[in-house]
Length: 135
Image (cartoon, rainbow, N blue to C red; front, side, top):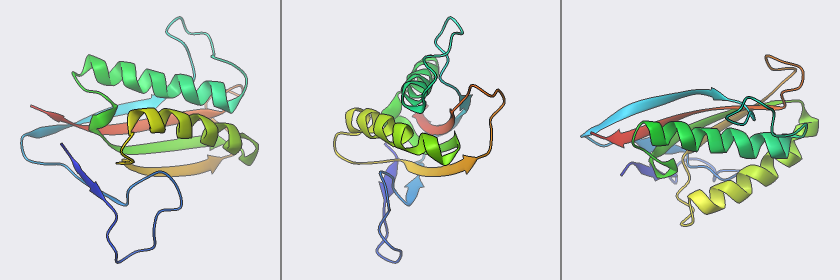
């Protein structure tokens, strides 16, 4: 299992994430491309950031499963939100999902940026991830 922690030499995280993740020997890095809030049939989960975030995270879980991994293997999550008006819905969804994925509050590292737009105007959220999977 990857080691994730917050060294005492920097300020505490302002959200649900760890400052540092270390991939142990015997693991390989799996990189997940940006996932949007599209269901497996290609339809958008909803017009709002909360629905899209939940579906994007479900897509990450599906992609990780295809690699023989799960959310517990995540070491890095990088989220892009199209406008500050979508932050509340994004935070609600990630808070709920991360509480389920990481019940011990052993969060992966995480970065969040607010962008003016994503690849399509109806997209509110896109999330990339990296996982350390045992060989």
